[in-house]
Image (cartoon, rainbow, N blue to C red; front, side):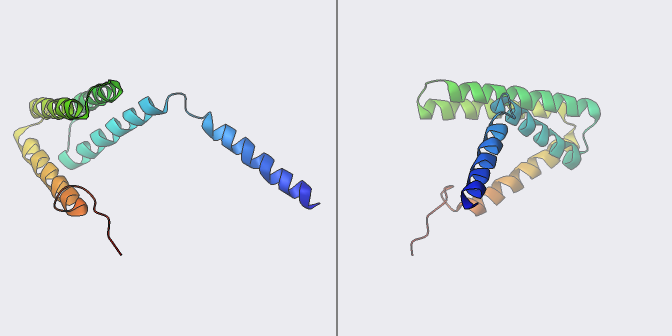
Length: 134
């Protein structure tokens, strides 16, 4: 009786693991698209974007995500990758200024500043999480 229960639990665990591993065809691209869409949705609510602006922002974020992914896949040094990603982020920000109105641009800069400060407070003075020694 106990062996039957144990085998049933193992069988259920095996089936559920196999099922969950097959649910996503391409998890990286779907995650990237989801991230771009979440960013665009957040901007739409924070900045009151029009539908046209939203579509342009979503397209911009999707393209940025694709380019970032390709940079991560390339075999270049960590410093070169970081420099290229920084350039890509600054290009995205400049393109964003062309999409936004002046009021939205001001709100966007404030939003980014608050986000940066929040990250800085969370990560500490040097921008990296420190291990607390006990």
